Length: 133
Image (cartoon, rainbow, N blue to C red; front, side, top):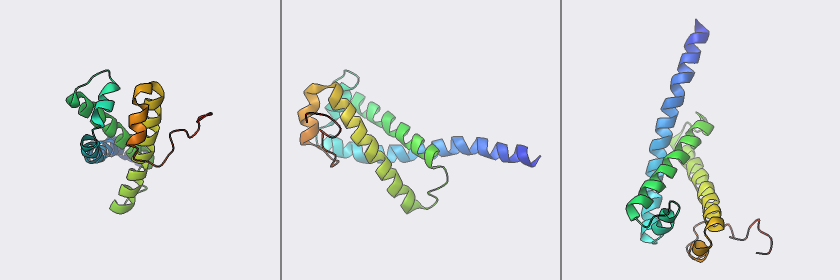
């Protein structure tokens, strides 16, 4: 019976972690989204789904933020048990995703390349990993 009880706890822990991860991702997404709105970067997010609407950009941005939060929570599990280390790890994880998304978006949308470079938040050069710069 102990095995069944332990298995039951593990099964219920995953949805709880995903819920907390989504909440954390949304909090971080709103904070980062406000910065993106101020810097007039939301139209680029809307372009991902061929739209020009700021509302659509926010929906896309928050959906991506929730996904990133869920994946962080599921990958990290209970390791970052304290608030400060969890927040720091989450910020780093989100920054890595942001840089990766920016690289993907600029590779697919040549027209946004100069805007992404001008408003770059992370210090990763746009030519990193590309031959010919």
